[in-house]
Amino acid sequence: MDKCRALIFAIVAVNGATVTISQPPTQVVKRGSSCTPVAGHSSSIDDAPAIQSAIASCPSGTIVIPKSTTYYINTAFSFVGCSGCTLQIEGTLQATSNTTYWGGRRAIFLMDGINGATVYSATGTGIVDGNGQAAWDLFAANSSYQRPTLFYINNSKNVKLSNLYFKSAPNVFHSVTGGSSNVSYSNISLYAVSSSANVAHNTDGWDIGQSTYVTIDGATVTNDDDCVALKPGCSFATVTNISCTGSHGISVGSLGSGVNSKDTVQNCLISGATMINSAKAAGLKLYPGPPDHGTAVVSNVTFENFILQNTDYAFQVQSCYGEDSSYCETNPSTAQIAGVVVRNFSGTTSTHYSPNIANIDCPAAGTCGLTLSNITVTPPKGSAVIQCANTPSNLGVPCASGASG
Image 1 (cartoon, rainbow, N blue to C red):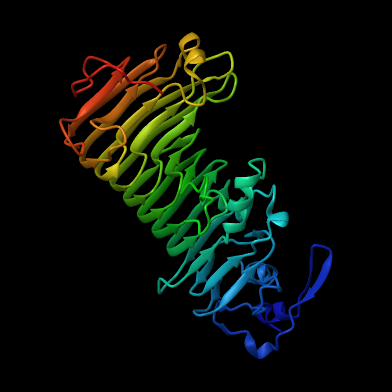
Image 2 (cartoon, rainbow, N blue to C red):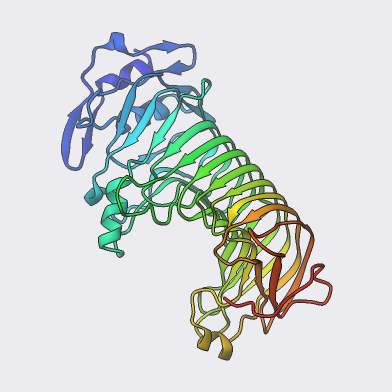
């Protein structure tokens, strides 16, 4: 019996109970190195073990989720055993909304220590559904509730995700960290909008942490937090051709939170972004200095070719992130900013801060190697104003006083 066909007889333990994958062998399709796991066809049956068994049995093959089918992910899904595997999603993978089960778990889908994996849809019909409404509602009532990331990549390399639709992440959509490298996302759509009065808090599109050579090319994001956040340890990340609606913007940070920390983000490019109804188009989020916090280094980061539509700020530097003004006056940020370039920003801001289009509060006890050029963003009425504090004389744009935050 071949390995892919054998998986239908697997008996797996889920939460202490025994679940049998009981569909007949004729429902498993295998063509060459491709196989289709049998679905339970019921939200009460966990399909995660069957898919994981297929990955373990065919570690370098293709696992197919057929079009017009839903596979239910009722327990945490791991790619353990994958070695060059391909998960082809033409149907839907839907996580359970069980907030008791997911509370405190790191991820719904986890790639940890994987070398070589592809997750994609050939037709563009593939959906990964985090089913996060119940988590958003619970978090609104209990902010200590710990929600999982939808798709978490840790200590992995040579990973590709493409042509997929991710929806309703309970928390962050995608995280990349743990020394991961060569991770690419292309033609990805993310959508998190609450159907209740409780907003979809903390649904970052991407949190890119300790990693090298992460690329995002061709993405559409609708969410309620950072569209992309470059986190501590991020280097050589590239984001191109992205559209962000309702987000907090594309951010470096936050950096320097921990006592004695020295967080770095370096050698990154964000080029070609359309920012719609966002809190800012782009910016840096820096904590103030010791004793309660550390410091940060941001070097060789470029933001270019942004188009704004009703976005509150075009660009923002916050050097008092996470603290009140009295702490920051006594313990100003010591962050080092070098080689940060902001250029070719156009479009319009919202009425929120009008006529101010940018707020640049550089580190008072650090450095601010920042330049802006070709900023043609306009407020709804009047002439554009850029508020500054602690900025260099060669910033590149005229400044007005009053920057804070």
